[in-house]
Length: 174
Image 1 (spheres, rainbow, N blue to C red):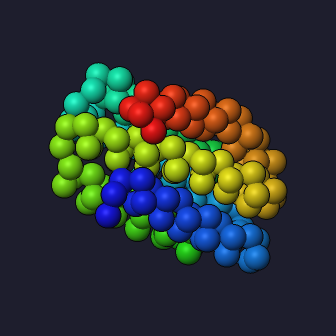
Image 2: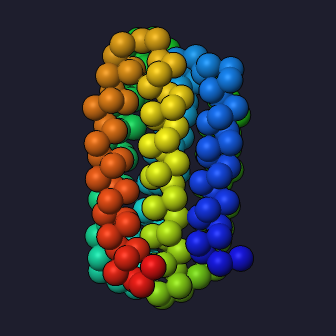
């Protein structure tokens, strides 16, 4: 399966999980689990890319993903501790974790420019899907104002990551 198709399927899985969560209105503990899982998935992919990417630009982007998403997870973890909320595993967080594991498995099979392209394709699809989930499900359904404010605060970083990934994708001839 080519990298673009894999990234598209992964994005569709996130959106399907998000749509499912939309109909059942995720609770704040479920939203907290989704936020932490979404960030961890990108941290894990970034760590792999830092070691395997051929291009310095892709390695630099991967380092940025690790740094930024680790910071968001730190803020989210501090907030859930402060609020005494235990993140609750749910179909969306499980789907994100499963998709992230599949992405890592697929990326591990690739080398050089094929790895770079697959990683960047995935980052474009992933950030778009996460933004859609934030806008359509997570932010609108968050009941706790601090949790909602955290997601609103970090949303521009996801937009910047998406634009950065799209720019890299375009420079690769996509």
